[in-house]
Length: 444
View 1 (cartoon, rainbow, N blue to C red):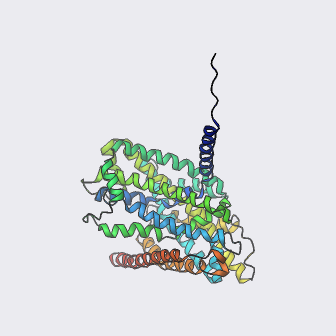
View 2: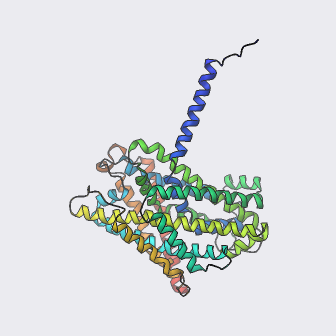
View 3: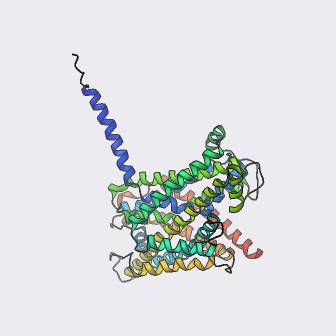
């Protein structure tokens, strides 16, 4: 009777290495959290519609803009994340670093964050209501759909517990990704065109209301020019990632979240390129849903509005949770600094947090049937956010280059160079933002 030959030591060693690598990868995936929460917070109704419309106007030609814009965003957010990990004071929040420059900046940022939260909640709750109205065939109108959105968001973020938010967002991301994969599978993919669009760096002839160059700038600026980039460090603090030892874990987490944003964006771009390109122009949610339904049947309409519901609801919940906490930290830390006690702990789940939740949720009034249009809110958002974005990048350049704050982990020259480039994009965004605001005021 023959005996089985035992595996060699070399084979055992190779298998152990593979098992170890797989185990480490699985371990990293299990700890992923803030990146995914931020990913769904970043992807709002505007991204969903804009990517689909861009695919409809330009096919796959401008698809490379998505990964390019996200490279900028990854660098900027990863740079912001360096402060709570490496600062010499042991600050766990980027807000403390800002307040250390000037206590008054805490009040400025706190007020700006609250206004940003209110305006975003107005848009997102309206999107939730619109989605539920479409999904229920009008049984639930827009206002009561928004009310349902408010109730479910309060249940999720009312106690200010991060782990509950992370679990809910992971489930939603999985379901949303599956829905988009089904949509793409049903409409089909022109794989050679997709590959060419990702690496071709082509600027096609202008189509529709916006030139291809302006669309490129708008997508890049939307990634770098937003107060939402301050959300990720807040999620890191909630997760407990506040020491240099968390840097690698944080970077992998942010990379995972950035890839998730890219995946969702590419999926909707493909839908636009395959369903809308070459056909009648579609720029509204109803036109896009109708075209998708005409291409693959009623399931297409339901997938689109489910995607819109998921995008608006998660953005509303993520913004309300994180921006309310950031605003609490801004006001409380500024007050503590004025009292020469900046190191005092801040309770981000107490009464002030609940008050700021109420402020954000009060934006529900913009979903009432007789509420005015969103032109005034759009003008307000552009008008206050533009200078705040410039101030944010300038503050980052100062904070991250001070030895008294960062010690030996100050920015390197190339990191400053990239931040200066991002500052240029931000200034350009401000110029166009103010121009758009003036146009809206003149037109309305």
